Length: 162
Image 1 (cartoon, rainbow, N blue to C red):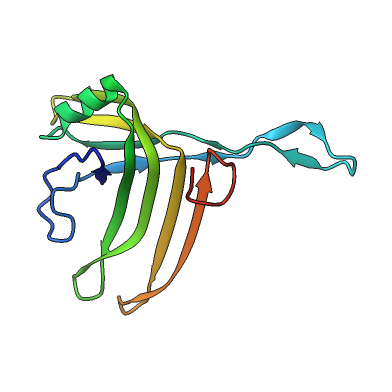
Image 2: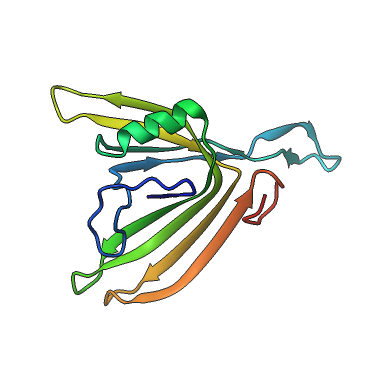
């Protein structure tokens, strides 16, 4: 994960993600509530979609105090990028999913220690627009085609704009 403007530098040493934040888990949901009114044809109508906060878990590290500070101050980040990587057939790391968020705030953060283990923290992000890009990985490991999607919560349309 990479926070842009203001930047937060993490501890990743990966050459393609130097100073990014390494994550252990991710959770998100999108719901389409049913409108209280039915259509004249008898079917359901939809309302404005609801995006939950994107929630992540990571080990406590050099970034933690800055996340606490920005969460406390309500800092708005211009953009946040999350890359999902996996190994190809030759052991090289390839990106298969990229998520970009626009106008992002840290909506919550909660550090914890479970069963005397290592300290971790779970934090959530709210955003004004989201863009997804999935890159297919073929059986041999090389990359195939890709698919993209986007949604602006501000404009309520399928763009990565606010």
